[in-house]
Length: 218
Image 1: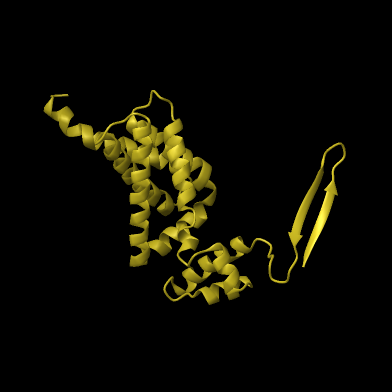
Image 2: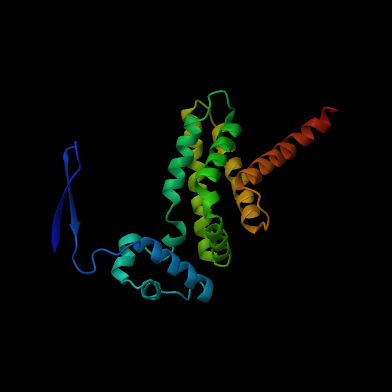
């Protein structure tokens, strides 16, 4: 059953909102409930031993509702990949023009750390443990990272960076992010992901510049 509710705000135009009140068609925070239920079951039983039916039952919803929000049970862990990619690409493209390629990548990664990851640290830790324990999920993670690297290389090319510099910077940046993310999720301290990214970026500079500096007598 659909009910049309007309809400009139003083001194403004009339706003018409249509709510579908059919049975089973609307569940408060259904996506969040399904996500939390899935993570609980992955921790308790393991990813492979958990079914979509069990996730839906734990959330108090139906399998049909699950598939309305997730293509499969892996998407609970990887569902935000496209949004992350869009954020990183737009951040690289919008980084100050004076920044060299690696610094533009670091700028974007640090922005994502602050805007996306920091408030989800506990989820990130749980997710990292689940992915790390499953070969299929580890492979999916590598594919995701490779896709991010390709997208960042494209963003650098938009900034006028030629090849192979664009791909080298993007691949190196994703390697930095991967290591920083693993350190952040395994840390028991209060360090922020952006700090680990900067430290890892600095370590990369030392590794790549060290032999050259030694050869030149520096």
